[in-house]
Image (tube, rainbow, N blue to C red; front, side):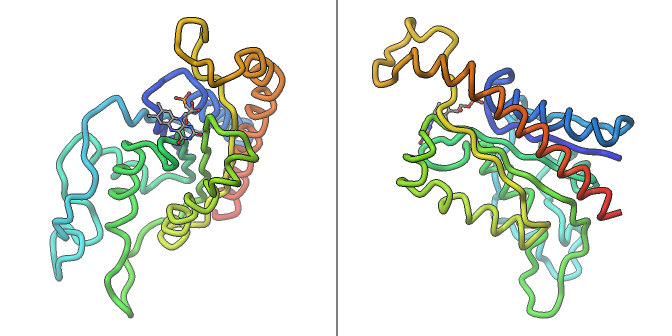
Length: 220
Ligand SMILES: Cc1cc2nc3c(=O)[nH]c(=O)nc-3n(C[C@H](O)[C@H](O)[C@H](O)COP(=O)(O)O)c2cc1C
């Protein structure tokens, strides 16, 4: 079996990446022999959808697939055959990161059929989404982050399956707060959250991975 974690953070060893790695460990705890690979979206250049509509062209060679030739193309071809995918992104200006947004356009749009009667055949694997952010849970609800993300989850649900999700709040942003202008934050409190809450967030990510693996088992 094959599972993927898609990292929408440019940082390869910070909050989002660590949570995604844990979720892959959760998958491996169910399927020890499965392949579980993390793909870092900031490792290679690619664009979002170019609106060429090759994926919707009647009798087109590329109908239902993205025609753009770049480093994302082989990844898209690989992950559409996956048994489960876990996406993860930091919140940037109340949304997912830029590269995650570009990825999602390319991942979803070819499978959106512009037809009342026809659909595009493809695998419908279980999905999960991990969001990490600076905001507290309370602030996140006040700003409405949960609703803002609904539009992606709605798209993913329409095309694939309804994603499970995990929200991780008040993440640790720097290794050493004293080196950065950051007096808007209480460093001591952040350190404490990192020590006491983040391990629980990692446990939740592990459980999320297990859940996706179990769903994949049920999908057959
Ligand atoms: C460009 C940028 C924009 C950000 N915008 C927000 C935001 O709107 N809301 C928020 O809660 N955190 C915001 N953050 C903080 C990140 O979401 C947070 O630190 C995240 O956990 C970083 O993930 P990483 O450690 O995996 O890179 C922003 C960070 C950056 C760099």
